[in-house]
View (spheres, helix red, strand yellow):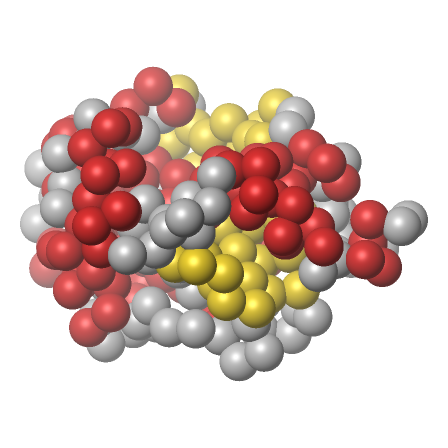
Length: 210
């Protein structure tokens, strides 16, 4: 039986991952970050020195494994555990370029949709409500001021630029970052994590009651 999907989108450092984990934990759903899928492939592309012009051919030969590890999942690429490498600086610098390749997005989207065939999901990303699961009735878009998001990114020790990620994600030809039709927009600038989680859960009355 197909699962239920809560889509949580937004720009870099808007709080998507932490909020999604919290919501998934509260509901007993599986937490999935679409960005981790792209980062898994980005790690492989960096390790193998893949030219972006060859990315469409390269992605077709890759074997991505998904293992449930509540409340989330673990990813492997060609038998290698990529989890420790998802935040590597080289991966961060590669991921937006790789995600702009249509064949890569098609591959990731197919894997994301397959998870919903048998799991209830809280899935975060940049096009979950607009492209991956446009039919889900539970869509959210988290945002925060550029300054606050830059502060959060720096606190995490991340090296990628929020402004540059915004530019790349919003201007790419394939599935640019956008607010999905029907999504509930939440400004997280002045809210702490528990407040944002509570706000999302407050919009999911029929789910939290089950």
